[in-house]
Length: 369
Image (cartoon, rainbow, N blue to C red; front, side):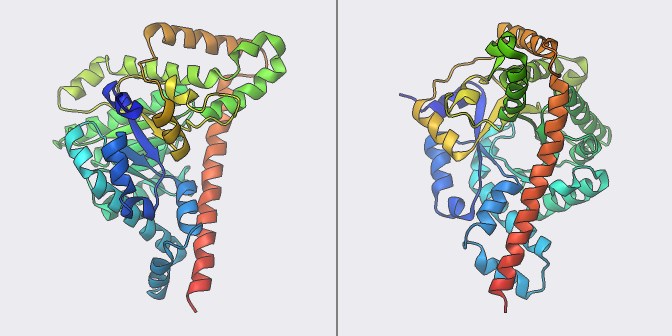
């Protein structure tokens, strides 16, 4: 029987790993996941690094060395993150070289405290890209209003970009605009665009957390929409992706070698134990997509996933109707909830970032006398 995660890849959806640690890379486990489980890429975020670096002793030697050289806490953190991403990129390099579509990449996020700072985001994205110095790195930039110009700028510079923290379909349309704009600027400068890769990371399960709370207020009328709004929202986003790649604008870029900006499903673990632990994986299988899975969800799908393409034109039409029903219930709109989720997501990642800095600062005070 073919491995379920390998089958996903054959259906056009790339399974990535939403996790990184030094031990995962150096123990050989990452290479095994690639070889045996069909793993095709990796993402990271401040929360993941906070648990890896501040929550273990694996990095203590490097913390001690860097601190002794006079590095600041922020400089220590950046150096540790860059080293881990470089090592993972090297393991993924054969996947990247064989894919041609941006698989085999490893994502590193700019500091979330810069989510409302366009110029600061650009400066750090360019620095991280140069420091990692791997063609299969991706720099994660939040898809905030202030992040959009940074996304276009970085793509024009040839930097691979993972647009993160997307919740609203309306913002996703703006991200597609920024993506095309960046590639057009690069092409106009006479530079190649066939080597630039990007994904747009659409967060899923967090939407249900908000939507279900609203549906509880709606009573029996909206009961059948519980645990469905997040998937419907993602399906509508995928329909927008499908429309965009049919446009004359995109076709002109594709003729110059541009690669599509695939939709990436993030936040795909199931929070409610009464639901299937692979709910947000099974429902969102479609070509030209990525699903980045935390370790528990990755293992669950490897164990009992049932891959088949789930997003069809009929499913897209039904999703649009479901979202219209949701907004018509009179307990608030999805747009209000997704706006809240963007603000909340930035704040939560900023909190994790500060916890990471605080944890490393504590290590410095303990390790360096």
